[in-house]
Length: 214
Image (tube, rainbow, N blue to C red):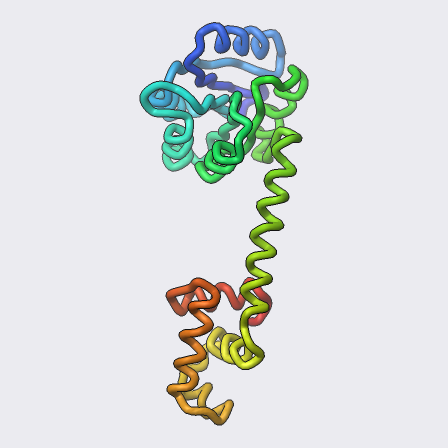
């Protein structure tokens, strides 16, 4: 990254783009290097110019901001995407983060807040509009609660077998160690997979590792 943060503005409203360009051009720390009026242009210009930050609207004609973000991040992982949008809904918020955006700011944000967001994202850090942080925390807590419920649904014997499977024991090994039949081990294993929503052994191992069982 150069001393000045190089910005690509992607928004289908000409007046809004002009306002952003005027704002950032008046600040010595920024350089607006290009503007795009749709997702296709944003993808092309991001690939050609490798900006430090793309200010990305969501609702654009043709290729929208979501698809453009996914494509830009896949082709140019070092280009940072800051979503600048009017959409407050969780659907758009999480969708854009999943696509690879590093930040999410509403168009009603204060000037200083937007400047801070661009600087934060340009450093490779994440910036979320304050009202959106609570939603991210709520989602995290919901996931944690779901995972805890899954763990609690396993019996003591299933947890024991899960740990042995994760440590590389075969069904026969487990049967011998626990003095039960291989078919019983297989039944327990099937139940564990169903309760945890897993289908492959490597997923089971990763789950066990994440839970500190390895």
